[in-house]
Length: 601
Image (cartoon, rainbow, N blue to C red; front, side):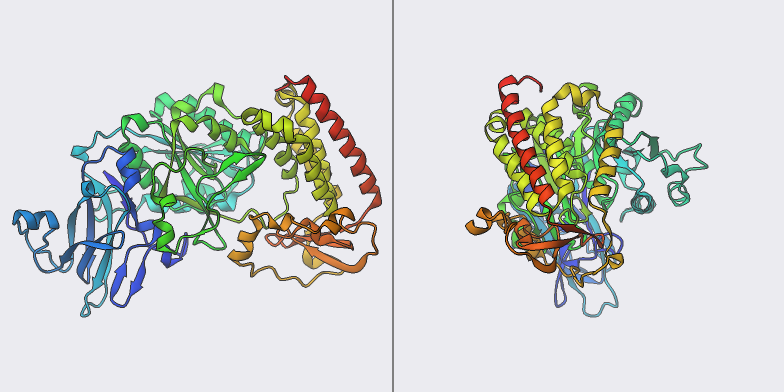
């Protein structure tokens, strides 16, 4: 049973070599994040008795098998290949040729923790070299479970992203391993693409890549499901219902949720399938969640498991640099018992089909917090994160939330009332008013509208939510924000600012998540960020990375999005200040009335 393949950087997916291997002269060190074999997680969750490293080698004269930083075995090519166990038994196998296929039995049962990897020394007289292969469990010694994986992708007018990922998948399906075998998981994979815009089947590139014929006949692997624009939540729910409907016919055992605009390496399916096939009975319904890597800095792991509490999403190890071996082998990466309170986000997260039921579908909240709410329900089943099960995605902090501010507000409160109701009732008023003030002093008046409306709609209760039309509501919110904050391409703005944000460093991005940017002096707070002080005539450029206090004494600002190049001029408005004061009074009164009334959720 193949557990993970040896990987190399590729231009199409990720070309950061340090994530795969390092070089020291004639030595190739396969100690990059994607080529480490994590022992503790496989020992705990999988019923594996033996492990081997299956390799095809060319131009290599020596291999060293490593556990953490220690050499535990050495294989000299063109000489008898004798493993540590065979040396003890006095067994000498046949020599391996210079260009050959070898199998190395690893001392899996001797090491419970840490990682396996290997070094390869290039033969100085070789004209070229090649190493390919995979880590493998003995199928005869594993009680292999039948696995059928449905992939649930929701999309809305993102044809270029879907085509890119489907092309990667289809090309991978044509490849074979060192034994000239097709990947086993390829015959146990089913892709459901929920098309909320109903435009995908009209895209010629998509049809050509996926072998769809005129919209009438779909390729066996891929099924496109036209759907109303019910947001990511509604789209994922539609994919869940499709999986439920086809569970028996396809024998589905698992459902993998994936973003449409994230880059993935199809190898994740090999690792997911191998891991699920070998699970011990007590962990058969564990959630396997994927990490999120950044597209701008592909070696940065933005998140691998987050947890929710006190109105916030928490990430204990955000923006980790995975080029560093010490980081990749730290306790929080290697241990199997460090994710009890974590949930898996739907950029890449696999659930057992027993969790996918009509009674367990997400609330119709359109976008945001659907994965949090669903994941928190599955905590008793456990969760695990494996290297190589991940996607690459654009950073979240380089655009303003826009309409998502409404969902951030409303859906955060829905999550809190479900999982921390006492904390919510105690702190809601202060949190909501503080949030509104943050938007107000930033001159983000559209966001002020959404903070206010998100709170008031939450206070309407679950019955209002279930009876609402999410698509109509979203259109209304979009129109409202476009009128309040008309973002346009920066070059078309009058008084365009020369502001280069293309070189934002990982350090600057990390500081965004420390929340220190919200700190300010007492004077700024008492003066309401200098609202009534003489104003500076300069137009201050404000990005999502900046503190809301950066507007201090500026009459006009340019809200600028580094990711889109769009901006919007906003002005300090006493009218908005008065409106905001009245709204905050109404918010406080409504919250007090709700706390005494209760019962709406």
